[in-house]
Figure 1 (cartoon, rainbow, N blue to C red):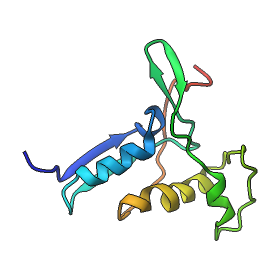
Figure 2: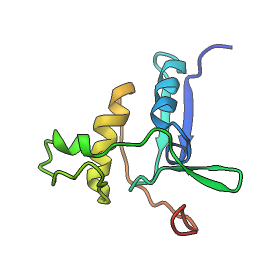
Figure 3: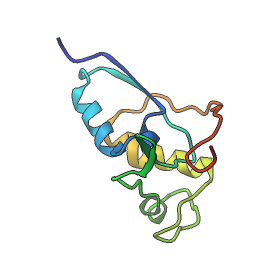
Figure 4: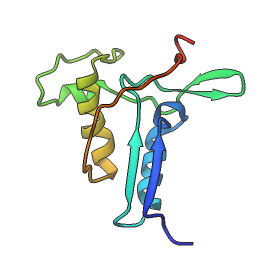
Length: 121
């Protein structure tokens, strides 16, 4: 089998133990001109399920480093603070996560309907 031309990663980044490692491996695994469709809810609240337990991700997704260098003029967050604003997290997702391993062709905001999340079941 060869490398895939298309991969779908729908609402996986916030529910895996190592989201950055997963993206790096996906980029290496794909065909050179392959297309990855990646969806993630924002604001990003990373956690994963291990049996009946909810665990924090081993790779903490850092937002503060983006804001320190942001050209958006956003308020600089403290080291333990995370922004909750969709626009700022979307800019971070493009700048620090997706653009690192992928050539981003399009970025869109669509409704995400869920019965709850790890903080509000």
